[in-house]
Length: 201
Image (cartoon, rainbow, N blue to C red; front, side):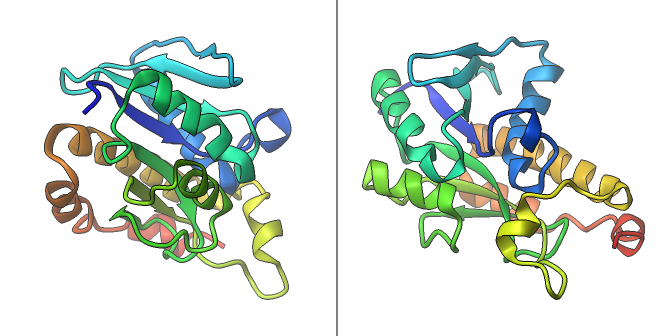
């Protein structure tokens, strides 16, 4: 087993995608880096990385710059170089199949149509990594999933977005310290901020 834990936030690179629903994974790892005043560097696979000690563990935050559907091409060489255990890897991503504001922990299983998760599983030939799923809900009638995830959150959703980011950060800290089962018991009991959800459109 590798000593370092790799934590991957998924998203699309560049200012044009900043703030999009599909970039929630980036937002969570950015929050961790910002809170510790850490700097990102670019590695040879054009992945943004930084070291972030969490619960006295040596963890590496990563933001693939390959675009979402090629995320695995950034993650696979990073896992290899770090000699990190893919079973301990934590991948943080948006999820259309969860109600907006819901956070769920999942180990292995299908990709639910998420192209970033699919790419990582295909490149690693391994699916049993840990996922922190951030619920964004289904698109409104007449809007395709592809269009929905590539739109910014509305101002009315600010409270829900903040809740997703804070809960996602908490989930990562718990996963590093206590593992998936303990984290699932705590995170899955977190209640949604009802005012924010009701005020969203």
